[in-house]
Length: 237
Image 1: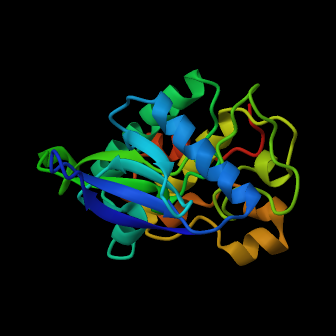
Image 2 (image 1 turned 30 degrees about the vertical axis):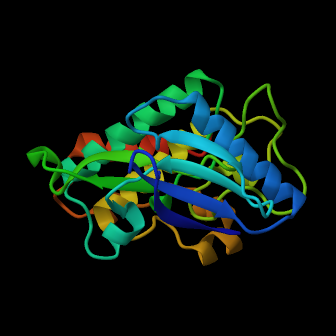
């Protein structure tokens, strides 16, 4: 759909990330504009910072964001699972970002490892990274401002979307993001998804049941597992 480039402002030298949209499809143009408009509303340390957006002389929409040094969570998990302190630090950062979004009536709808960026830093409690930032609000649902998309494929990523999101219910609540965060916590601790895409496609009932605690190993505190199990509950409440 598009590409992200590293760039610098000619006057100030500020490094930024520029996301350029290549397609001219109407739905993707709307999605791109939505992401830019939503990011412009935020000033939160755990959400990637908006700089500006416009259109190139060739008619390509672009979005300028802060430049982040580090790697996304998906890249990190291909190397090793997270420790319990790292998982809790990332989970807290994402929860605070989603709390800010939910306060504005915004449900992200696509929390997954590739949409969580680990900013490189030097805080000892967080290993090699200083904070986590949530990316990509392109398919976010804006409560009373826009309806949930009902045409074509279900917005979201199989394996991370909540049951009510997979059922394409007319109204989504912040609980959908809580469910996805539960999946992220599980994957952070184990290094693998709670359920793979094939399981999601063949048996939604089984795929939406909480995974057995035995998959987490013996180093995860009982209280943390209880939290994850509650986050992965089948019903939004």
